[in-house]
Structure formats: C-alpha cells, structure tokens
Image (cartoon, rainbow, N blue to C red):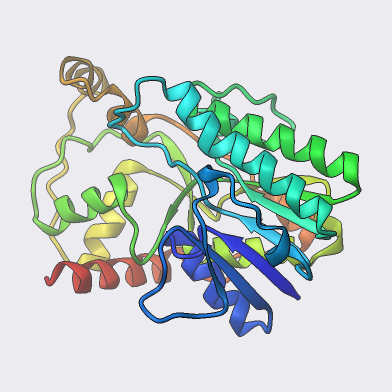
Length: 314
C-alpha cells in the first residue's frame, strides 16, 4: 500500500515510517524542512500555509496524519484557541478535503487522549465516554476529529481516529525525559506517594497499532484509545531506576503538599500529570483489530533508557 505520512520526521512518525517500510509499504513523507539528502519520497510543505497537495495525493491509499501543534506547558501565542485550531483543526480539514478529492481510500488521524479527558473518574476510560477536553490543545484535536468525520462521510472516504495516552520510547522528550534525567542523577524525588494509575504506550507498539489501523478492514469508522500499560508514577520511577541501575530516593510527601507547591510555582499542570489518575481501556483495539502489544514494558524501558543515555553522552 502507498501511505502519505505527515509529521513523518517526528518522534512517532519516524518510528512508524521505519515499521511501514519494513512491512512493504511505500511512503511519501511530508516534512516542513528539506532533508539533508534530497529524496523523491519527501514532500517539503508547511501544512499551516495551506499547500495544495493534490498532485502528491494522487495514487495514495492511506493518509496518516501525525503532524500537529503539540501541547506545551509554556505557551507564547496570544490566542491559544486560534493558534491550536489553525494548526490542528483547519490543517486536518484541508488535508482531508484534498485527500477525499484525490480518491484516497482511508484517512488515519492521530489525535490525543486530551481530546477526551485530562483524568479518569476512578475507572478506566473507554471509547464510549463522552469527550470533555479542558484546554485549547484538546479542544482543537476533538474538533479535528469531528471535521474529519464530516469530510470523510460526505465524500465516501474511510476514517480512523487514534487517541494515544503518553507515548514514550527512544527520543522521547517532555516530562518523561526530565524524569529520566532526575532518576539517572539520583536526586531525591517527592513522589513516593504518587500511586494514582496512568496509562502509557511505547512508540514501537503505537507504530504497530497505527499500521494496523491503515490496513485492517474493520478499523474504518472507528475511534481507538491507545495504551499498552498502566502504572503509578512511583512505580514508573522504580522501573526507570531498575533499567538505569540507579538507587532511588523516593520521599513520601503528601499529595496535598505537592498540589500546593504546584499552585505556588505555577506548575499545577506538571504536578497533575505526575500524580493524577488517567487510565484507559484499550480493549476495543484488541477486540476489533486483533491487536496485541509486541514490545513488553521492560523491553521498552530498556530501549528508552539506552537511547537516552546515548543521546545525553552518559
């Protein structure tokens, strides 16, 4: 099959493209920047500038839309709602319209769990739960899902939506990378009582699930929550200490103290992501697609830690 992949050089996109090629698919990669070595398989385009991709979409079987303005704890846009909607919702609308006009059979959209919720209500979320995004990023992703469905159903194009939880793996950034650094440095961490469960998925399993959504007939018209493990922050830190072979100093600081510190330091969001519950049930993908995670949590953490140390020169 022939795929057009946006966000192809990103954290998830690069792993997905490598897997797709191994499995015999041909690829067109959409990138904002030209590669160091010119390639006919790379389309250089800024999707927010509304490029006309009609010509390159001809002959494409599946669009995999990974490119997005990602969520950041430090934002500088004057109007975040407008900025996120332009980058995530309107780009998706235009790309879906061009794909449908070009005769693309299926459009696979990688959304986010934040399009659905920031936390789980004492049980695992499922696809049946009503979405209730709480920030501009999550709202823009949910709107993008909705406009994709409208465009696809109006033109007879199949659609698939994936809502991943936190994705980790080789090259991961953000809070996960910061946690790796803190554990590797052996610093005491006030998270000994952070037991609330959170769902994760490693990048290798996620790439596999995306590819399954591209090719499986039953994926059409479905929304899938994506996760392959569930553990508390303290448990995750212990697992990272094990793979990094570092002693741990987890301090049993009350959660109420952490919450107060987060408020005072303007880091409430960071604290919530480390201590709040966000569990999902990924059984729908298993039942509908027959999907099973290929890479274990232990193996994924070993790969992640090894890549992080190589990149940081440790």
